[in-house]
Length: 134
Image (cartoon, rainbow, N blue to C red; front, top):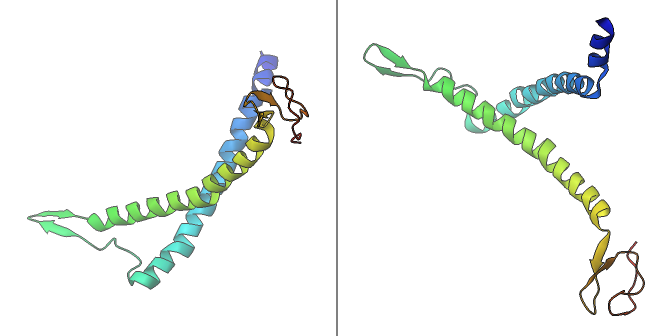
């Protein structure tokens, strides 16, 4: 019974998932701190108001606290922007760079436009001499 549980825990996907959760939690703290401690004060310096939580609208006996919604919306947009510009964009660029290196195994012959291996020095279709791409 315990050996099966041990095998389950030692499977690659369980360990990878646990690592991802821990790294994700740590990264969340970093992004939230960046937004709260760096970006929000910059917006406050530019706009003059760092916190919108006091903004309310009274309708009869009810109170609509739209300032809290604005705070949440601005925080979400800032976190999304930080994730996009500091994680997603760099990751896409790095992935594209590696994919271009790995994916270029064939190319077109400049004479007959048939597909030839990148390292070929002569086209198999038209026998034209081509410069190899390494």
